[in-house]
Image (cartoon, rainbow, N blue to C red; front, side, top):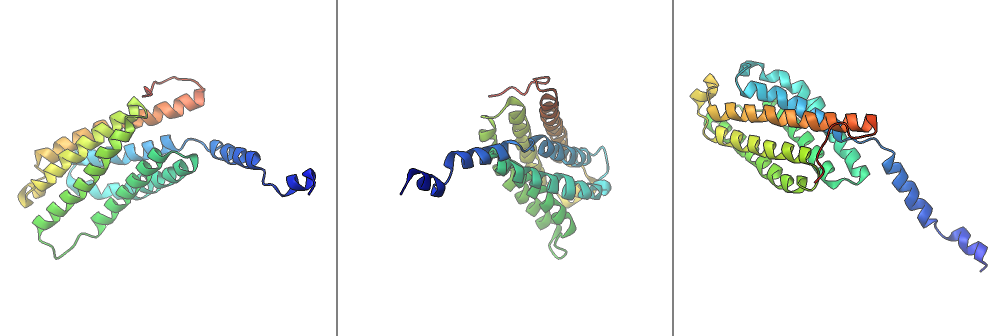
Length: 218
């Protein structure tokens, strides 16, 4: 077989690899979208948890939870998979699923369950997310200071809310007077602010093609 015939049937490995890399690299950074979606939804629900807004308006967050916190983060996570960013993909897809599951939870509470069981069920639900966020914080420590701050604050937020819902009574729930949940709301606002900053910095630095707002790479 001649050299020309060998070249004709040999897959162009270098060219294929280069094309794949270029295709992935050409996709815009989905991180700022995921962070903004997370921040906006977290901020609204946290304002409710602080009792600055009554619990009766909590259902207003459902649209944000389903479409912005849920769908937008899910899409951002899928694009992170394409870009080869395992941490970003797992984080955005998971928290997108969190907000979608939150939307489902508020719309499908078990009608026949005792109120105390429902409160403790929500507490276990929050505990699941506390554990997940805690070990993702370890991975965040190899990204940037801005992202690490988001995950540290979010872990504290979930932890405090978990304690709040485990200690919640039916009377406290009706009065919206649980101080742990109020504290979780304030921590959630700080978490949202940190996520907005990380999103703002990524968008601004990408647009200006230079570091305008530091994210403190680790």
